[in-house]
Image 1 (tube, chains in turn red, yellow):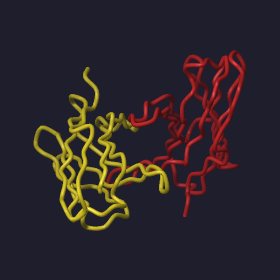
Image 2 (cartoon, chains in turn blue, green; image 1 turned 90 degrees about the vertical axis):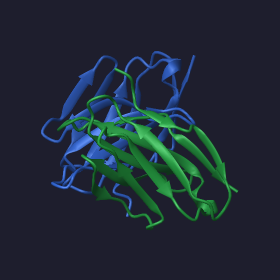
Image 3 (cartoon, helix red, strand yellow; image 1 turned 180 degrees about the horizontal axis):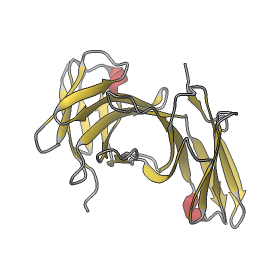
Length: 114
Length: 112
């Protein structure tokens, strides 16, 4: 049962344009969402997060939007830069009394063309 | 602050052997989680340790185990290695009640 899904395996955008990466989830109990950027053979790098009590969080060029009713979140990168080319993972967390775990989507390969 | 460190970075083993991977969390972080990344299954949660106690466990066989020491450093062990255990093993640390997990560079394990 894939509780977090990223339906687009890849996305290609031009430098300077907006990149929009999407993520859907099925478990309405998830209360914290994160986006990570990853290069091959390296660990994921934290980008931005959002609590389920908010619908938007912004950090520089990165903005995450959360639509709880649709169980959907998106990451906007504006403007996109060639250095943003990487695999982006969305992750969801369920803060349980026994701890927490991250459930990841499959990832979206973003390519930003100069 | 130094980030999460993992050793070794690369490892080659043969089927049937066992392996121990090490993780040092960010200073002050008491929670350490382990994840496995494979091309077929993606990133999957193995277990979480907090104050030397396993708090959470993913859906992996008992061959996968871990422990945490009093200085919050953690080790994970895989016994009786199988070809399918070839993967990137990632460790992440989290401080206190913060929700963000910060990842180390990973250990690439190849089982032949």
